[in-house]
Image (cartoon, helix red, strand yellow):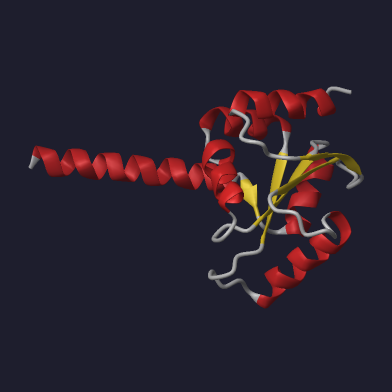
Length: 147
């Protein structure tokens, strides 16, 4: 009995942490840009192929799911993910939104591609993920947002 209760508590805790982590990563562009403007925080726009791009999957696991990065992001960024999966279905509205974002910010179709935007939507910098640690990736972002 004790083992089942313990496993249940662990499962619920992990599910809660996962929900908390992903609740910071938005997929609604209108909402993300609004929050960025209202909070005066830069927006990190992540172009990903979540179910086919190995580097995108690695970025998701190593950066976007990492507690240290998420703590930093909560205080300093708004994160918007424009996903282009091949096997996972998206709504037509989300496909159109992501295509529009790609046309404006990622016309070459690079994956993963990370665009750091000022709160008024102008490009601050394009970033590339090259297997940096969360601390290294945070330092790179800080170098742009502290200017």
